[in-house]
Image (tube, rainbow, N blue to C red):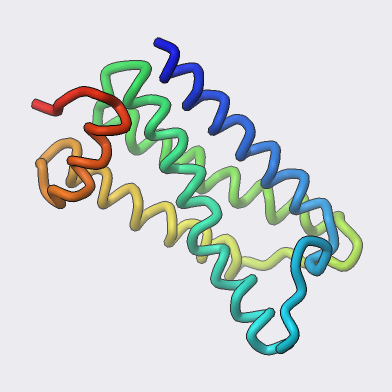
Length: 142
């Protein structure tokens, strides 16, 4: 039960961190010396930012309830939708921009993680992922 609260806290904290960081100018946290690499690095973060959110929410639901394919899809949709909300939020922040391509990158990251978790949990594919999930949840999958 304590694990469930910890996973919920991690997911909620990450949502808040995304919101706060999206409200800051793009170079507030880090600005790399090479402008080209800085742009590439920050744009590539879209692929993992909301994938991490999906993984945190999936871990919470895996620990809290019966994890079904419908719940898994719901979590993926919520994570992707938060990516859309984040882009809308950025459109109101000075020195930030919102773009459809960023939303697409956010969704690609979520879809990849959704697929990996779906295959691991429901079909026991990707044994390394199955093993990792079982270790953090401290239980075996049927």
